Amino acid sequence: MAVLGAPTRRRRATGVPPAVLLFLLVPLLAEGFWVLWPAIQGFYLALTDWDGVAPATFVGFGNFREAFGDSVFRGALWHTVLWLLLFGGLSIVLGLGAALLLQQERRGVGFYRAALFLPVVFSLVATALVWQAMYQPDGLINRALGGVGLDGWTHSWLADQDTALYAVIVPALWREIGYVMVLYLAGLKGIDPVLHEAAKVDGAGRRQRFRHITLPQLSSVNAVVISVIVIDSLRSFDVVWALTRGGPYHSSELLSTYMYSTAFQSVRLGYGSALAVVIFVLAFGVIVSYLVRAFREAE
Image 1 (cartoon, one colour):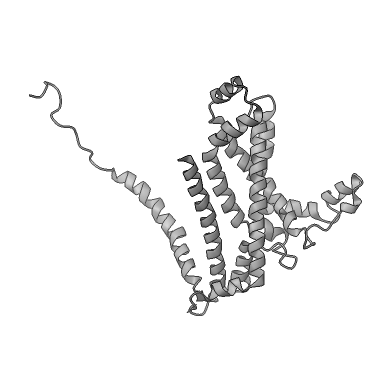
Image 2: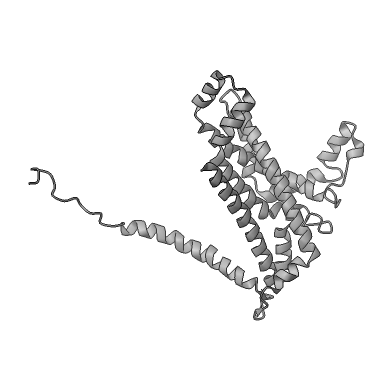
C-alpha cells in the first residue's frame, strides 16, 4: 500500500518550454546565416577562379598548388609563423609575469592593472596610428634614443625590411599583454591559498611553488590563453595594414594581409578564399593539437 499522503507516481517533465527553444533557435539561425553559410561558401570559392563578376570557374585544388608555388605566399606563411611564436610567446610570458606581480591586493595595484589593460579598449587602427607617429624618423622613439646618447640606434623602423615586421609586432603585443594578464589574474584568484601555505611549511621555495602548484593549477587558463593568442595571431590584420600594408617589399606581409590584398585589390576572390582556408587550417590544427595534448596530460 502506498503511504498516506505520498504521491503514487512522480510528475514527468513536460519538456522544454517553447520560449527557451526560441531563445536558442534565434542565435543559432543567426550564427548559421552569418558564419556557417559564408564559411561553406568560402571553402567552395577556394576551389574556383572568380573575380566577383563573371561566373566562377571550378579549378579544384589549382589555387592551393599556385599558393605553395608563390614566393610571396611562402614569405607570408613564414612571417605568420614567426608572428605566432614571438607575439604569442611574449604575450604569455609578459602577461603571466604582470599577473603574478599584480595579483596581491595592495595600495595602488588597481591603477597598474587598469594602465596595463587600457590598450585593450583602444581600436587597433588608432593604436597603429599612434605607433606610426612614434616610429617616424623624427618621432618619439628616435628622439628618446638620441636623448640618451644612442644616436647610432636611430632608425627608419617601418621602412627597413629587416625591422618592419618586428616594429609592427610591438603595438600588437602592447595591446595583448593586458588581456592575457586579466585572464591569468582570474586563474590565479582560483588557486586555493592553502596549497601555497602547505608548500611553505614543507620548505618549498618560490620557484618550486610556481612550478609545482601555480602552473598546474593554471592548465585550464592556459588552454584559453593559447586558443585566444593563436586566433589573434592568425587574424592580425588591422595593425599591420595601418602601419606597413605588408611592406616594404612584402617584408611584413602576413597571410591575413596577403589574403586581403589578393581578394579585394587584385580581385582574385578564389585565390583569396584559398588563403583563408590555409589560415583556418593552421588555426584549427594548432588549437586542436594543443588541447589534445593538454587533455592527455590532465588524465
